[in-house]
Length: 200
Image (cartoon, rainbow, N blue to C red; front, side, top):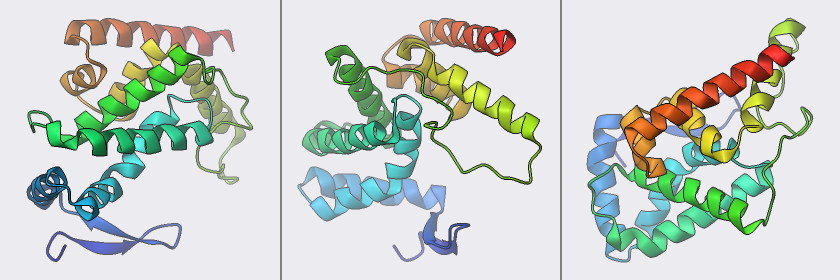
């Protein structure tokens, strides 16, 4: 990993590797090639690179942090089994997100857990900053609850596009729908969230 990045002390006191995105694409290609040849440590390095971001996405699609952990773990298990078939036509994170979103959908369809609105006490996220005025915290919690109350078909586009900042094309590819369908669902999701906030 020499030359790829530098260790940076995070706000939680843990050192993390900050990776240069240009170097990452070259290094990632090497890791994917090794993983496709059966190199488990190479795949584990890919997991380390993408796990936090993938978890952040599925956390917004699942009812609880525990379920999000299970979905993330299952996503990487499925990715390891399928890595030989990854053809590189999309970015690796796009491919992983698609698996993660599909796993969240699969759990909902099987009824293993009902995706539901959670109470503010159960809402995932950073602990509140007590120095903040209460109004912004209440607004943020209300927004989070409104997003989590959306049906998955609307929540996923909103999370990928508005929260994760993916392009319309990337979000549509992950969800396996057309860009037009993505835009339509995103428009509907934003309207539902707006209506929920107005009701509050």
